[in-house]
Amino acid sequence: MSETDTADGPPPFEDAFSGDDVEQRIYGTILQTREPTTASAIADSADCDPKTARKYLGWFDDLGIVTRHDGHPATYERNDAYFEWRRINQLAADHSVEDLQDRVRELTTRITEYEEAYDAASPAAVDAVAAAEGSDEQTIDDVYSDLADWATAREERDRYERARQQRTGGEREQASG
Image (cartoon, rainbow, N blue to C red; front, side):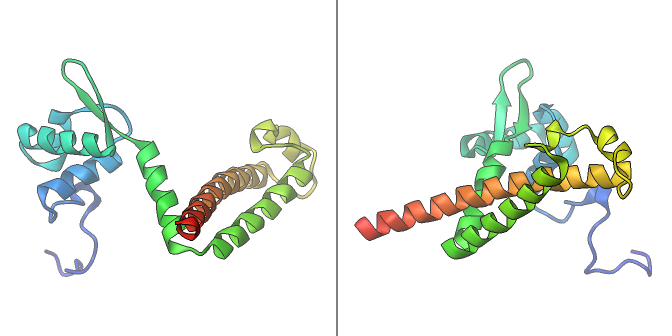
């Protein structure tokens, strides 16, 4: 270790999971995988035996963390739906119904402001170049920034609303049970 490295700092990106056990290294590799990948390639990235990688990938498939694609060889892909579900469950666990409702209201207000400012129902309906050229105050970068924030607000509102519904559904079940 050089003098500038610290024991408490993050590991280098190329070797981000070197201190973890093999399960964590495989999981970390899955998180970074953006397309169907063979167990051998995942094993190479996780620095483990392909047989060990297949064992954990089978387990992760059973849990819904990855999707297995049959073929020769089989490939594995991160299941984004699992991570979305997990995020919503975490929001529902971490926030009260009132907090979730407040956040939905805040995001709805922000979305409505963008809809009115751009006279459109969604960011996809906006011609960014035309919007920037038709404005004296906004550059094309400003418009793209707004559109990205607008899209993010819509996605976040959906997550918070789903968490709110999950939370209120659970409270109704407890009240009636």
